[in-house]
Amino acid sequence: MYKEKHIRSIAKTISWRVTATVTTFTLVWIFTGQITTAIAIGGIEVILKMLFYYLHERGWEKTKFGRTEIAPFLIWFTGLPDSGKTTLADLLYERLNKEDRKLERLDGANIRKLFTKTGFSREERNKHIERVGHLSSLLINNNITVVASFISPYKESRNFVRNICQNFIEIYINTPLDVCEKRDSKGLYEKARKGELKMLTGVNDPYEEPKNPDLTFSTADQQNSAIIDCIFEYLKKKKFI
Amino acid sequence: MYKEKHIRSIAKTISWRVTATVTTFTLVWIFTGQITTAIAIGGIEVILKMLFYYLHERGWEKTKFGRTEIAPFLIWFTGLPDSGKTTLADLLYERLNKEDRKLERLDGANIRKLFTKTGFSREERNKHIERVGHLSSLLINNNITVVASFISPYKESRNFVRNICQNFIEIYINTPLDVCEKRDSKGLYEKARKGELKMLTGVNDPYEEPKNPDLTFSTADQQNSAIIDCIFEYLKKKKFI
Image (spheres, each protein chain N blue to C red):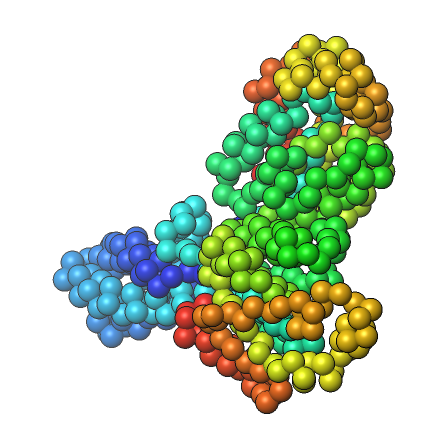
């Protein structure tokens, strides 16, 4: 919630007075041809109207008419491990942060403080994503834009989030499995191939592709900066920014 | 985040023009003694300055100078089961909701969607309260005021919340145990006395009284409405509302 301080109203009063008194002075001079009358009227006007203008500003500060909140949205990156979701979400967050809006970033790492670690069964994974959905919905209902990146492999939990969050934008990072596996930043793919890790999405647990994502990209053949530009274009087209 | 719509600037332009042109017209009339000159100057001024005023408003809309956010705070009700925390927190929430601010209510019931049920050991209870603290801090950092009610029996987790949340206001509902036990809205005290329920705060698990709560009340000898009034007085004194 915002309010306007008195100092703002005072500064506006002064900047307006300069604009307005120059106009009045010029008009009176042109019409009467008398510079002294123009100065006299201009002089009294300066004092009187500054007072009126200030009171006018304070009066308007009391009403919400014509004031509107910037619409929040939820950007949801989904895709295989190492598909590039987190990197893209971080870049997008950074760029959105330059805009004048409330913004939160949610991913596996920073929600650990909120949610206890859960298991990897379908049910447990779905529950986890549903909790993230509830949190996102709480934030969005308070006009906070959310950038989330989660593997979120199952369609039912993604749909759950879509249903409870307004302005849900699903971005599918469709980087091919072999490219993700080559990156293997945490060595998870290697462990899964050796059988040391069970239930790794893409290897021994399914990733259910989104049927109608709002946007789809692959970091195998697109530059990150180009993808971010595309997302910005989309948000502009949809009037979110 | 707020922005001002064009319609607001237009309405302000008109309301100001009425005030200002009447002033100019009167001044010119008094100084020149000529009503025709006053009308002519007033007439041109109306058109010209409406345009200038509108542009002036739009220019100011681009700057944040003198615009400030309403400070958020966290009201934390702590006390025995059936001490009256939830009722008071609900009443306070309702009344704060009439003010022009972002507000969330957190209690055991409505955070169940976010946090899985945990056990009743000291460690588990502390973890639970810490999670609520992290959530509150997330909300407060986004300028959302939070009204929370939790038994929160142990001092270390209450201190944890105090340390991570700005503007933490601890309200201790110090209703005597025998009064709480008489109420026994969920039959928990009875179960605990029979030994069917272990770890009920106040019966077979300690409640550690806050050492320096910001406010203390007892619903045994104070009316709810009087307590809410006191809290409002406190918030006003601290310049939160």
